[in-house]
Image (cartoon, rainbow, N blue to C red; front, side):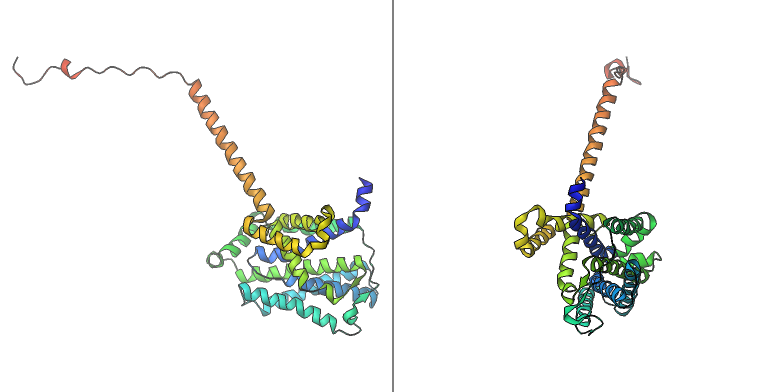
Length: 320
């Protein structure tokens, strides 16, 4: 077990950081906000952490926290600016935000390293520390999916008008989704950058949007568990299937197409639906068996009392 862990440490770390990136997209989607701003915040968090470590001399977690906070703040401001946009227009605006981050990084001069990026920002991160951070994030998101909070978020996503009629501040929930998305995206970018010790504008581009969206579509957008399933599939697939590495983009495209057609709820949705059907069948089988047992144990019904026939009843008012 130890040998397997040591030989797959990079893949495990990549799975955890990919999960964070996917969660930065899954959170707003679950609230009904078609936003990819979390990918742009990935770049903001990564560049800020690298600059803080190489230029300001901050330690690993200080640099990551600074990048996370700045990304969350900028994403929240972005949400305020484009709050009137919905649907496809909102998605395009957030994709443009991600591309703007890449352009700014390319033309940032000495601060961002230009097209070459920043090198030498190597943090002292361990897999256990990353797993602990991811576990805290997942636990908080899991709590938000339960109880009253979860029902309110689902109502905001499914029927904003009904949510407003029930007294739910739809705008506040959508703005909160931008804030959480930015924080998680910045955290993912900071951790990833300090693990690799480098970040370039090429790493913060449209391909990250495709990766995050593929993870969500394949795994399922309804819960953090779908993001985890998708992250495991996409990170480990090139290793399990050796030929995939040469056809990675094509395989990803086929997976997205198949999942969109045959698995609208992702792998998580398929598993949930299968479990519900099996449970319903089990209940139906037990209920039918219980009824049969009750009928078998019930005593036979007593014979009905015989009624006198019409001919035996004497006629009234007639002559004898």
